[in-house]
Image 1 (cartoon, one colour):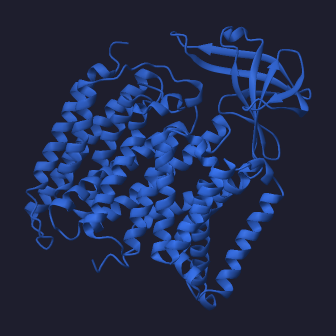
Image 2 (cartoon, one colour):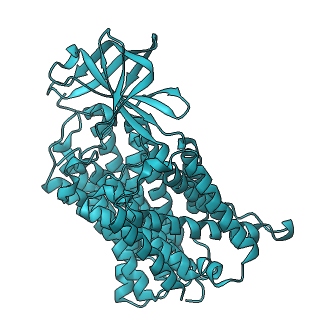
Image 3 (tube, helix red, strand yellow):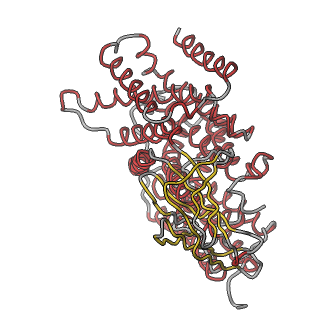
Length: 280
Length: 273
């Protein structure tokens, strides 16, 4: 029975995909995505609190729930890996798989917390919590925050302030500040491969130096990257390409990543748990 | 600059590392398997095996250090250079496992693994150049690659165990594999997440489903599946061994298989061919 529900859930996602195409991601921008995320997390919490004995919650917390959620996520990444079609991540089916994965993860975390604090006497399972909650935070910030992220490209021209930016899909927008290239420098290896390039940029007149791997944080969640230059002119480039990435949910992603790093450290230090391996 | 260590000298370093390691592996078989036998002779054999294996590691470290100096950049970019680290970490993983669990066979396993990669580097060297494009000039570069190579070598040993587990019926093979998988998984996580943090700094996004990233995720998820199946007590011994072999196949796709995929031609991770 639970498998039937899971299959129906995925079938609905398939049907939506066939009927409407990829997810219209921009409709879900802030604050709608945050509201939906809170409704989702709240429903899981209420189900956990009030319907713990139900078949639904039971399945989510079962071995089959854990294994099927990992298996579905794995299958989807294998499909993307084998076909090379990375825009499959914008499909309803992938969203359904990830939503299922996050739901199982959240139920498992709630149960883990409960086991950690039965009447406040239990031992906190740090490794479990860091790994699972970290993963949930990283996946959820990417999933629910996708509609708020935006990547813009600006051609910054030497001594000429510009405000216009374009996206990969060709749509344009205006920046709330202007950008101007002040100076561009590059060095090459003997074989002509660039070894270093950097640009002095004025943001509303304030000067910063951008290099590859060294973006500048312009406002909350927004960073400016040096993306390219006029390859034909090299060091004499009269413009450079700047990339502006707006990703306000990135702080949650970093928090999740740091938790997972700590969890992985404990995985290394403590090694396998010996509870179920003895009876093989 | 003729006195500097370059790939031309690798045959001498590579062959002596293989000989030291093989000698260590052979000596380790003279140690009596019964742990309760604590004889002076056992101790001498064990020490000799450890000293010989460590010598192999020293020889490889000397070559890596020399190559680093002569290239004037960390030797971490071409496939040949990553194979060099892989042999180094395979021997380290073998020695570590031997010191901790005293399996007699592990030194021969790691020797075979390292020898394969040393031989590839001797017979099929890549074009080795000095250039390091700006995107790779980052403090993340060295930890990102070495951590992955370290992880791959432990998971390589787990793969060999799984193959052995399909053939023989020794019961403790999966428990030993679990330990290797946990270490490998920890470092796989370090590698993947350091990659995500670096990608944010270099390209603006933690994750962009680049072919190499996608296969890294598939590898990570497949080992995660193994760990959970073990924790939950699911799967027969045969299924679990086959799963470990599948995991390692994903890892190979991630490491070099993606370069062969037509879909990967625009990957940001293809620095060499």
